[in-house]
Image 1 (cartoon, rainbow, N blue to C red):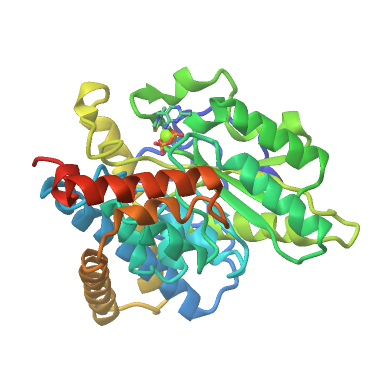
Image 2 (image 1 turned 45 degrees about the vertical axis):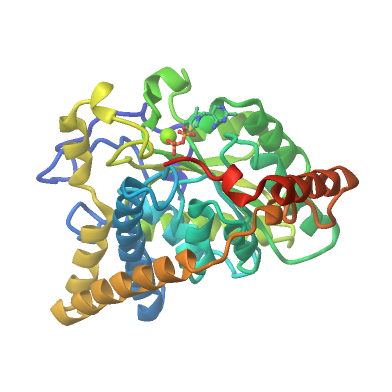
Length: 386
Ligand SMILES: Cc1ncc(C[n+]2csc(CCOP(=O)(O)OP(=O)(O)O)c2C)c(N)n1
Ligand SMILES: [Mg+2]
């Protein structure tokens, strides 16, 4: 996989003609398995058919979840939501390349990691503001979503170092954005990872934008993967809208992180998944203020879902019937999750419970204070006027 090393072409170098695509390629030099229509152009990872269909189903479910979540936000049924549309492959396929007990740390957009781990109904509860949403992720080894950009990366490295010290055969996988690479926490975390040989995989979702800040204004590095070089480990650039390529590079990085056979000795890897956020940054954003629709159209030609569907059809794994049933299953699953999440009873005092393993005296004092205030003024006094 040496052609995927950090020192690839400068980002954005469009490569329209060389591969003979009928659409421009906005990604530059990346590791790739599927062409824009799902045609095989690289080495297909050796995966059971069931796993290939699971990856496809999870991506379709993630997209359906997006549609419904945006609609729920517009109806006032959930808070601000960050859509994944266009970026489904990066977190879905990456999670399928891990073992189930490898913890995942993510930012706020990589819902595919949660969906690939079974999509517990509690997940949507987080977005409704319910504590069950955070607690439910613990059961599937996904850490709570992290709004403070890059703040989860030192946690991921700490977990990886703990596995190493305890001789546990587990690795940590962290997802974050291009914007996160400008934060101090990113540098501190990756520096530790390199120095202490911590078994980690760092997946940087380069979706070209950090809210309204374009990739070119984020860093003068030729690529984001190049940053790994400073910490003494490998950086890899991959077509992040190609689920098979993502699976292949994450599986290889996971093997390197896990191996302690002298060949690698727990070496971490940073993977730059080159991709695009089709929609707004969040439901509170209007991308027409800072980018042209033409740009999104260019990237839509590389949409991961039709590409995977095209691949499965070519291989004879999918037909109309399978595609229809996957879509119906995704609709049903998301509808079930919404019903379940909206049926959780809310208790404001729960918010103090999931901060530490054991509630601290200060948090206990705050909890008592809240309960006393509710007792005195009644619950209605604390409800926001709509
Ligand atoms: C420490 C910190 N600084 C600023 C913000 C405000 N903020 C929220 S999202 C975001 C952009 C992050 O961009 P990127 O890491 O590329 O992720 P993306 O949203 O593109 O997936 C910023 C600056 C924050 N949440 N945390
Ligand atoms: Mg970004």
